[in-house]
Image (cartoon, rainbow, N blue to C red; front, side, top):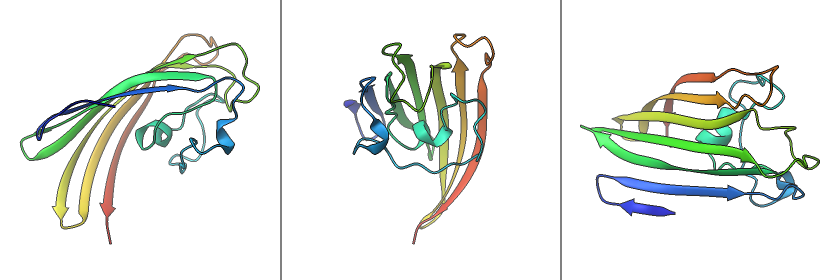
Length: 150
């Protein structure tokens, strides 16, 4: 939902609540995503592109947060943050057995190089929730991306 939108500033809110018994993988709300890193860091790791590129909808997860879009000089910048929590102890239909992260956030800055060519730099964190004593760390991502449209 757009909370505030001007030519120089936009604030968008996000809420996702998927029932623990709803198999989102085979539904129309499951976003297409491709694996960037290939291997997960833990069995409950949320792939970066799952929340950086697409709406975060996962069975038995409640997610709320938002995105702030503005610019610094000629550079568009986007900040996003999502609070993640479980809905119940029932994980049968989910891809995950627990919520290992409680906060996901990222900052992205873009630069248009030429017509149709954009360079972006992203820094993101998945902050550990502390619920899993075996896996209790924060994941970091630093990524640059060159996109060419044709």
